Image: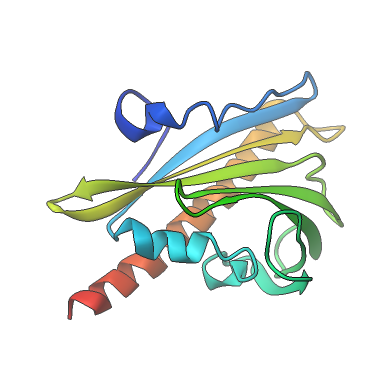
Length: 179
C-alpha cells in the first residue's frame, strides 16, 4: 500500500527529517510503503548501503570505495532499461537507533543532479502482526527540458518500484521466519 504522508503517528514525528528545502529549479516528494514484516528485518536490508541490489531491482552491481560509514562512496551499475548505466552515491546519514538512511548522488551518467534522499523505517502493527512503515523522501534538480511534474513522476516511479521490491523481499523473509 502506497500513500502520501498524512496525519498521526510515527509519520508526524519524522516529517521534519523528510522536509527538503527545494529551490525553484527542484522538485521533492515523500512516499510511504507499509510492509508486513518486522522493522528489524526491513532495516537490515535498507541500512546496507553496500548492498542496494538486495532489493533494488535496477541495480546490477555495487562497488564500495572504502568501508561503510558516513561519507563513504559507492559506484552503482544500473541495469539496462533506464536512461543511465552508472551512479556515484555518498552515504550522508546512517542511524541504527532511529532507523534513518540518507544518501546523496554525486554523479553518474544520468539526469538526477543534486539528488538527495532520506529513508526512515518505523514499527507498526499490520493485521495484528509486527509490520513496518517505510517513508522515503527526495529532492532533485529538474533537468532542462523537463517539468517539475515530469521529474517527480519519474523519480517517484523508481522509488515505488524499489519499495515494492523491498516489500516483496521482506515479506518473503518474514514468512520463512514464521515457518
